[in-house]
Length: 263
Image (cartoon, rainbow, N blue to C red; front, side, top):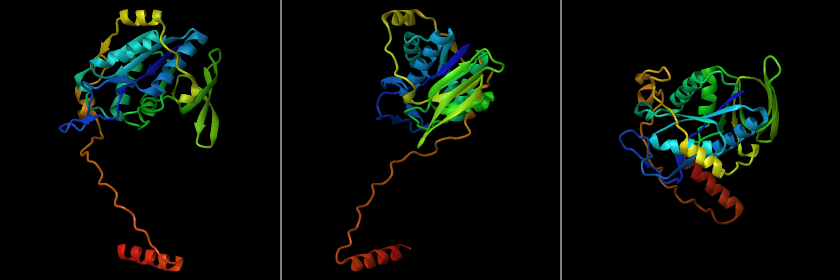
């Protein structure tokens, strides 16, 4: 069984700057961490590795500094790492990001399970995981709170998961290979061991460019993104409300007149 975990390095603070020329986040000089939801994806992959003797690989798309996130994942028990690092990737929207990750996963095939965090803290779109599944034509389950069972001795291989809903949960059966995105209810991430830190520090992490995954420069980054941020602005502050005083009937009449004047 081979498992791939997709992670993202995100700013540790919410006070981020925007490049006025490209309308993208400025990440240089900003302290970064692994996206919190991705920590649960890493932990779940390590638990499955321990249970099924699976092979685990973590991948991320990002600038050179994102290598630190990959090494942290290795220190937590992931076997291998791949860094998608290319200036051509800069400015990729969620569609193009999911395409790049999907192509990398194809190169790592055969892959039985892809695990992602439910969303990234710096974007909150929750689109990349489902986008990867779409590009790879994989069955998917989002907001997974528990993996009930995995049957590797059946044809096809089957996994059963619990998917979190607003008012409960639903049980889904998926044919492997598949993709899931996980929520924090799924587990409690572990801390890295000293042995894990030492191994992660020595590990050689390959860096793949757009050429390595079979994509043209025009298919990635800002050029390959069908959606772009054209303007960023701060919404004007909300004006204070109005209080209608007097008897109830009088206050209601005043409110109705105010609404009529606005129409």
